[in-house]
Image (tube, rainbow, N blue to C red; front, side, top):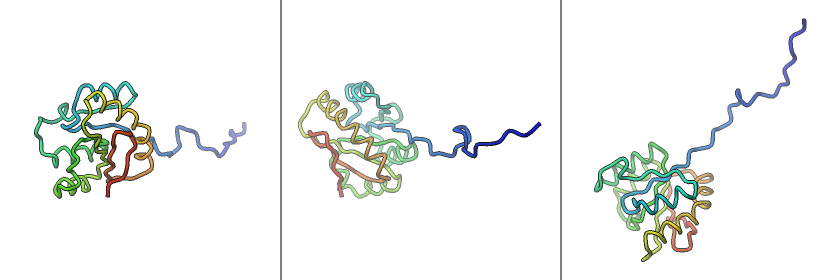
Length: 147
């Protein structure tokens, strides 16, 4: 009996193709709201909240390091992060991908809606751009790179 001839095409099971990277959003203390988390989850995002992992008031350097290890995409409202040297260093060292909501004086519900509108762009950026990076998201929901 002859051996079965192989097609030469690897099966999906033996393929070494790269698995899609997980897409988990991390809400820092400034955005750690049930309303924001609920809106993002309803839009299909997986969300981790700071208070699910750390006490309120945990130093940014601590949770930034963990976010980097986990590959979480940080959402924050802390506009001053680009001016705080220790936070910038921690963000870069941890390889964090961060989006800073800079939408001004809006309600928590409006913040959630704006971030939901921004989700497709956030996903696209994270799929194309390696961290670390910081983008800001204004009321338009369009992320812009911060340098």
